[in-house]
Amino acid sequence: MLMVQPVLAGADPGAVGAEHTQSWQWVTSRDGQTVLDHGCDVTALLPRDPDVVLVLPLLATSWHRIALPKINAARLRQALDGVLEDRLLSDPAQVHLALAPGLQPGQTGWVAACERAPVAQWLAQLQAAERPAHRIVPDLCPQDPPALHALVCAGTPWLVAVQAHGVQTVPLPTEPHRATPTHAPHATSHPAHPLPSHQGLPCLSEPACAAAAEAVLDAPATVHTTAQRLLSSAHSGWNLAQFDLSLSAGARRSQRWGQTLRHLLHAPQWRTARWGAGVLAVVLLLNLQGLAWQERRSLQAKQAEIAQRLTQAFPAIGLVLDAPRQMQQAVSRLQRASGEPSPHDLEGFLQSFGQFAQVDIDIIAIQYTPTGVAATLSAVAPERVDALRTHLRAQGWTTEFAAPVLNARPLADTAATTGARRANPSSGQP
Image (cartoon, helix red, strand yellow):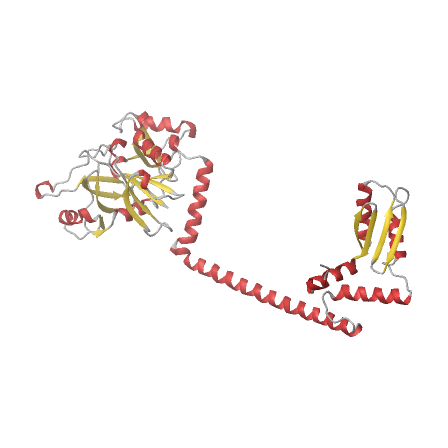
């Protein structure tokens, strides 16, 4: 997760044009909770991250509390222009507006306003640098309970009060004769409430203006770095990418899935669940390993028992490679020696051959050996030969065809011969 904020330059804190952006304050976080790294660089040197959040500078955003008209969503933006026309210092057509999270027509809530041109240019700069922003958030926004912030923006220290009825910004005096705060010139429409009493309110201050904040407030201030504040801004719930700056439905869906996944993987409140899932995965893995070990032991025991029965029934077999096939081969040899017919004798081959070849396939010559049959066929179409071989294989014969001779051997003999060659490669023909 990468949070970026354009740095404003110039003595006028109300100037927020993109031409004043010299560089970007940035902060990265793996879990969205703790700062991983931070710095200040030009656009091309920003870190790469699939989840980029643009944090608008403090002075770039003004806040307006309105009653949202009950109107069709397609005409909502035009209705907002009419409601805020008298509150904005700029032409409403040049201002970007965004509704508070969850604000529905007919309800009263906050609307954030900012100049559209600089925001569009900031987004374009990030897009050109292949770091497109997926979300736009304000630096500080109305919140409850209230708090004070001291920070530097556009080269000027500011004291900011964030509370339920608005965000008030005043210059932070650095000299005694400037101790009386006045409203920031850029604050287009802050509520008419004075700054709340600082008694009992926490003050989070950047290191550069901590001493000035403590002198004005006559109270200690907690150091809160820019990186920490930017990280907190990303959790405000606001997303100013609305109306003409809104993301596509697919991009919003992808963003929500990414935020949810990051939250599950890194959020502290899910740490116990992550540990539980990890332990469960380890237990299941060990259980699977145990079951696999037991299955292997059982299979080895059965194979050993079959091999023992084979050697007991046929003592002449010294090396057991494939007990069932070797036993079938031995039984076939005994049948041939005793004169008993076997499915893999010449009679069995002719019977299997005759079940398939009735008219169009004839045997011109045939040669039978104890290991197989060599049949010379009449001229026949290749597809018929392929069909015949498939049929013979289903009957327990393996075949090789070198026109016009079809060689057939029992599958049991073929497997046993192949196994013996693999067990003793040197015994094969050179």
